[in-house]
Image (cartoon, rainbow, N blue to C red):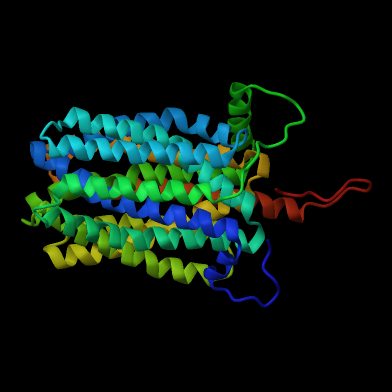
Length: 427
């Protein structure tokens, strides 16, 4: 549904599309629950052992599941009903949150059981993430697709404010605590399932030639490799998420060991990050899409600088400011990468390409465990500085690749055309 000439640049106009509006509502509720989970899961894990490594360990199973299963989830999303697949995943996540809340309430929770819940979450993420993104690509086209992605990114940052705030308030209430917070998250996912049930059915994609899941999987990776823009965007996204986004693992320890603040103040750091993300999402949503890959890399470089500032922050207020800059740079990078990928990917491959983003977060979750161990041994400040350097290295490689690609395209455009031959064209 393309936007008419002269239509408002506000991303809210895309909500006129009923199916996207329902999908967006369900996505918002699930993001709110995940924003709450960022706080409560870290608090439970750190309070059980007092170690950064324990927080990272909880994410380990989730990461392996997302890394291994995300390509399969993306392949299935290109083959089966997106509505059925997404509804099933959301139902399982809600049930898992309810079980974890019950284990905490009865005093039976352990790090292993918390990690098992994260493993289930990772399996469902692998199905849910690529399917939701591909569904947006099916519902919206052209400028509306960019608006839809921008609106989802914007709401993700809004829920990253209210999710941690709600979780912090619930945890601090003696009658609710961490177990009650998990019950609230389970109820939110119950509402998500009800919302999805209101949407129109999504039949499987029509296929002229029957192929196996394995063949589709191989074909998807082959498509990414042979498409230069998609290959560059996927590589940079995986590298930046792996190197930079793992900083969240050590934030509970950073608060306690570096800033001498309780873990319950984690919500303040995440709120500052979300506020920064909202600002940049609003700006990008109203900005014409020009040189999106170059701007994406600039945001990646800014993320590296922001992590370095967090590493040297002398107190809680400077850390809050650094967290806001991290929100600006990480949200800008992620939004531009997702929009660029969706714009440059052919429709039949959309689910499989977007699965790469879920694989990136899977690798990120796996890396959280060694990053937590490194922080326990070397300290949170030194670990943050190392992540900043790794992020800058990835962005530098991306900048060199983009420069080489642009130089090759310019040389091709200047090449003389022999009689009878068509003009050179870069993808």
